[in-house]
Length: 90
Image (cartoon, rainbow, N blue to C red; front, side, top):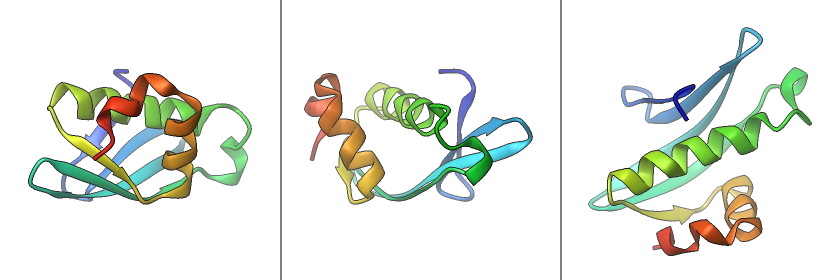
């Protein structure tokens, strides 16, 4: 998803929508990325922004050959609801 970008300096994936930034923070160790926290501004909640953010992040992660440790409850719940991402679990 081209609208989701990896802000490497901040260690987070970002999605800008309606002038607000939703983001998923991460840490990388070796070939494992740990998603630690996801924030969707209140004005964007219920619009699917968080799901678009995580889908874009996981697409990028897959293309880099990384495995995912979903420490963040939002990412864990997203992956549980979408079995097509199960192969990425560390």
